[in-house]
Amino acid sequence: MFRRRPAIQIKTDEQLELMRAAGLLVGRTLELLREAVKPGITTLDLDVIAEEHIRDNGGVPSFKGYHGFTGTICASVNEEIVHGIPRAGKVLHEGDVISIDCGAIVQGWHGDSAITVPVGEIAEDLQRLLEVTEASLWHGLAAGTAGARLTDMSHAVESYVRSQGPYGIVEGYGGHGIGTEMHMDPLIPNHGAPGHGPVLRSGMCFAVEPMVNLGTKQTVELDDGWTVITTDGRASAHFEHTFAVTPDGPRVLTALDEGREWFAKLAGETAP
Image (tube, rainbow, N blue to C red):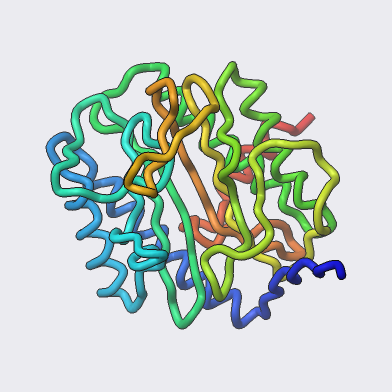
């Protein structure tokens, strides 16, 4: 007997407003952490800031306790791609980059977002990696329109990254559905041909999250059972936003301005 794939959750307008509340909390937490990143701070220090801010503002950390994860954030430094565990002994140094992934729950609804932040002054190739990865996220989000196919977002991410240089696009990890759970079907790869997968409908919500490496795309998981690193030891960047498909285009629930500035920028780049 064939198993039917789970239906993608469709949110009502009221439910989307709760997801927007969770998304705003995550977005504001990440901005607080961005300001806190500096040489000498530890990843556990950042985790404490995140948990206090989320709980003080009526939310619950999505990550803490998730399959035994101990942090409120994932804090992945340099060659660490995703799922870095916050630690008291993990000190940030000038020239590092740190990817901070954060999730929060508000009244049962989730928001999930990630940024990669320079620690002080960083090398030019690292700065470019961050810029390319963040822009690829927005190309993916822009493809998330009603009537499109799921892999149109994957293709948009990959196409942009490929156009910018010989970067490694991480495989085996990617975006996902989101709503009453943090991780829901379907998986959204950051590579692949367009025109495949479910048709996007208003009320669907997804997290898009490109992970791009300065060198190889090859990865390995450390013995802690969480941290994923590049096999060549070169740096990685990770950006993520949660968005809703709407009749008026993608509504980015974890962006403070819902994506208006970035979408206007992309529209300007494609204007005749």
